[in-house]
Amino acid sequence: MSRHVIRIAVSLALLSSVVVAPSAHAAAGPVTTNGCVASVPEPGTTAPVRICYSLFQPADASAGHTVPLVFHSHGWGGSRTKDAAAFKSWLDAGYGVLSFDQRSFGESTGVAHVMNPELEGRDVVKLVDLVAGLDWVTRQRPGDPLIGAIGGSYGGGYQFAGAFAELRDKGRTRFDALAPEITWWDLKESLAPSEAARTMWLSLLYAGGGTHLPPAVQAGFVVLITTGQWPTGQAGRDLTAFFAKNGPSWQVKHGRKLDIPVLIGQGLSDNLFNLNQGLQNFDKALTARARSKSLFVGYNAGHTLPSVVPPGFVTPGDPCSIALGSPTFAALEQRFMDRNLKHEDTGLSGFGSYHLATADGRCLTQRQLTPNTQYRLGKVNAVTTAVAEGPITVAGVPQLKAKVSSLVPGAAAFFALSVGTTPLDAKIVQNNTMPLRELRPVHGVRRTVDLPGIAVDVPAGKKLFLTVSPVADMFAGQDGHVPAPLRLDDVRLSLHRVR
Image 1 (cartoon, rainbow, N blue to C red):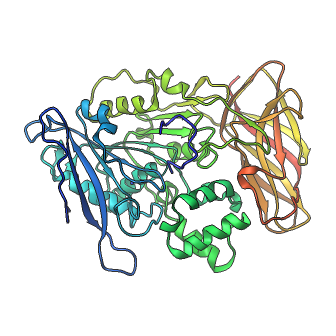
Image 2 (image 1 turned 180 degrees about the horizontal axis):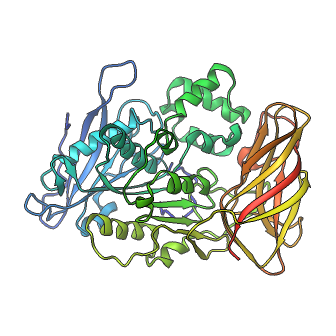
């Protein structure tokens, strides 16, 4: 499936027991080897888990002519790519490729722990160990192969899990460059921001691979989907503990940052792992030196469902890969690897900047996205309130601060910026909302809400609005309650205004 079309199916990472199956030893074609490595047993067991892979060796790669290698893996519920033709551009360019089945998927065994560094992270390290022993893969020093990684969603998660696992255990990672797409910073925050479940996407995730989860986590997913709320009591604590380590957020909290070049592709219209998640990876998971060699590309694609309630708008596409000189993100990531693995002059520029597709489909580049303008909106209820008149351009993550009151437990509101001529025709930018839930009645408590990250041009004759809705379709079914609106006083909206 193309990286830049709407993805309804989630495109959601010591050699032992190897089975070799050469696909074609003809000089004109690559050689495919299918095999498995023995990895960390499931908790409470002793039998190694089998992680299976397909390894593609370019026809001219040998001990006398070594090549760099690129890792690849699938989204949630998927399996590895076994056909060398899928990697033709990489193989033709002189890269080896390893595509693997993540724990519990495809031919790999075990249970899915959703990128736990002790499990899926170690799986990736075992595969790096395998590659380090191949005489046709370039080694920078003994045991250190020249490698990069690609993949989206769950296939982006393995890249961070593996690189951070090595960083924690060895003080450095053997990955030389990463290119994760549409993946997460904090998994709980993605699945249930403010502990309000993204029920629409959780239903699709569960249908696509829920049976691969541990039984207790499966039960927690069912609670999330059916109530829209994070479970209470022990079930909630178990679910929180399950997701605690499964993302760059946990690694950064423990003082670790990656010091390698990273090309991040993130969907501004992605309403599962939204732009906020990608920006935090870029801003927090990398050292300053790494960011100066890295690229952030935001496109209007990813885990994208249309927003009907409240109504949204977006123009699908990836104008920023084109603006950076590549026809697609796939072509851009190969140029990125050429630069960082082969040290070729690819003509790439724009490092350390944010390249964001606007809602109407142009590429906006910014060196920083820190809010620079504040609007005092006073009292706001569940309505659409005018913020500013066009022409203006807004980018980044707007932030709302307010005194919040609610009369009943479980009251919620869903926030977004929108564009229109009047409140009646205003549509939310890039189909995204972010929630605030109050579990108990409150009166005048101060709250801060990060709104969905956006990039939008508001033309002359239209206005930028703040939309505060009591319901949102990505979060449908919040315990089946009649919507209970929040009262918002002393509302202040901060945003990055480009012009």
